Length: 429
Ligand SMILES: *Cc1c(COP(=O)(O)O)cnc(C)c1O
Image (cartoon, rainbow, N blue to C red; front, side):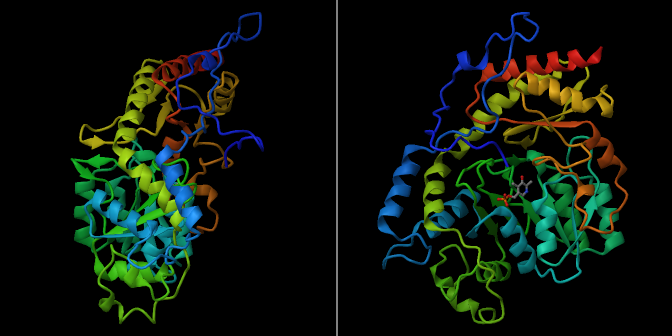
C-alpha cells in the first residue's frame, strides 16, 4: 500500500526530530525554495522492549498461540488480558486483522446471508468488505460535515431497510454522538458493532471508544495506533457473542486457553455448531503489541500535539476549513482531514500535485478512481443497491487527508501547513 524501504536497507531511525532533513533549498530560481523531506508513511521503530520480547518468542519456537508450556498463558492470551483490562471490558480476542474481527463480530451477532447491515458511507473498504464476507448487504448511511455519521439518516436507513445490525466506523478517528447512536440502536433493537481502527485510546465524554457497542474491533496494522504489521482485537461484554467469536476465530477445542472469554463449560452448546474460520493472532505479534500497550496513552498525546499544530496552521489558510471537533470528543489525531471550500473539484488534482511537489502527501477522497486508502462508497461495486447519498458525495468532493506519523515533530507540522498554503496559492491564479 505504501512505499517500501529499498531491499537491504537498515531500519531508518526516524524517531528523532531532524529538521535539517525537512527543509532544503531547491532550484536556483528560488521558486520552489522549500520542500518537506520526511516520508508520510514512516512509523517509529518498535520500542526495544518489543524487539526483546519478540526475540524471546522466536528463540522459544512457540509462535502459535496454543503452543505454550504448562502454566504459561502465552503472549496472545496475555495480550487479551492486558487489552481487556485497558478497555475495562470482560472479553477480548486477538485476531489476524480488524477486517477479520469485524467479519466474525457480524457473524457472532447473528448476521446471515442477505441480511441488511448499516454502515457509514464514509469509511474504509475493509468495512463493507467485512459485511460482505459475513453474507450481509451493506446499507450506507449519510455523513455530516464533521465527517461523522448522520444520526437522522441512520434512523431513516434503519427503518427503510429493517436492518438489525450497524457497523459504526469511527472513520479517520471522528466520533459521532454516541449517546444518540446508542439510544437509537436500543430503541430499534439494532446490534451496534464499533469499528475502532482509528480510535484506539480515544474517548467520548470520558468513556473509551469501543466500550459503547455490543462488540468493538481494533486494528494493529502498521498505520494505526499500535503496530504489529497486521492484527486485530475484538472486545465485547456479551458472553454469547464472545463464545461464537472465539470459536469462529479458530480455537479448535482450546477455548479454555482464552483467559478473557466466558468459562469453558459454557461452550458446550456452540462448540460443534460454529465453524472454524481460522484467523488467530500468533504469539510473535502479540509480544510486540504487549510491549506497546503501556505507551499507547502517551503516544495518543504525542499525536494530538502534532494534530493541534496542523489544525491551527490549516485553519489560518483561506479556502481551507478544518473539521470541527466537539469538546467532549477526546480523539487521537493520527491523521487530519480538511475541506477545500473554494477550490473547484476539477482543480483539486492540481492542488494535490502542487502539495506533492513540495513533498507533502495529501490524499483526496473525492477522486473518481480509488487511490490508496481513499476509496469512495461508489467504488465498491459489489454493493449493488445504494441509497442516494448527496451529503456524503458533496463532503467527499472537497475532503482531503494527511497522515501524521509520530516520526514528525511540531516544526515539521508547521512547515507542512505553510507548504499547503503555498500549494493552494499556487493554483489559485
Ligand atoms: C484500517 C481500517 C480497518 C481495517 O483494519 P485492518 O486491520 O487493516 O483489517 C477498518 N476500518 C477502518 C476505518 C480502518 O482504517
